[in-house]
Length: 226
Ligand SMILES: [Zn+2]
Image 1 (cartoon, rainbow, N blue to C red):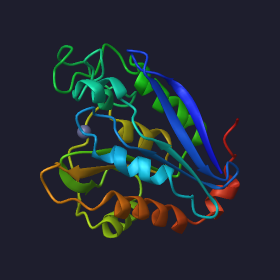
Image 2 (image 1 turned 30 degrees about the vertical axis):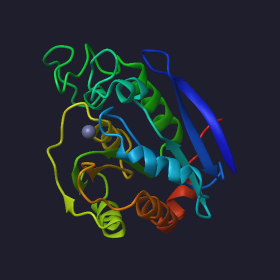
Image 3 (image 1 turned 90 degrees about the vertical axis):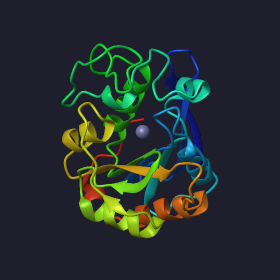
């Protein structure tokens, strides 16, 4: 089953949507975000490829191909308010700098509509696994959550597993804190000048990882409200 949902709008009123694949009542929920930094768009092709596949048995797969369409249109890291969305989440959020700064976190946590869209969807779905694609480092970041999940994705994708700095107000930092026993992590694809695992391989890695998750935990979890 494929369902397209409108989640909300960006600052410049571009629609932000998600595609839901699989069984909405499945015990395992997985969320993939193809792009949060507008100048790091390689993950969008992975997301679009996922949207043409089917979710593994027992998995409800959600895909947001682009959470920052204004930044993607302008080729900027930040959104149209010149906020780094990946510093705008409400865990460890720190006021710093000014609009347009590389990592400007916004005037307050969740000040940005794009961050609020992800926040609300995550709290509604409570995904066991969430993957955010970035560029250009070419690695899987040990982002918190269950390192076995991150290590497995690294093996499946062919990218090395490394631990990057954990930044205040990041999407995965917030999620791993807010939803213990789930795993949100960053996948840094290489820059476009470097050889990268193909979108097909990365999409397969997502599906394999999702299909391997034990469903016991899932059954005891309340399915998301519609
Ligand atoms: Zn990034």
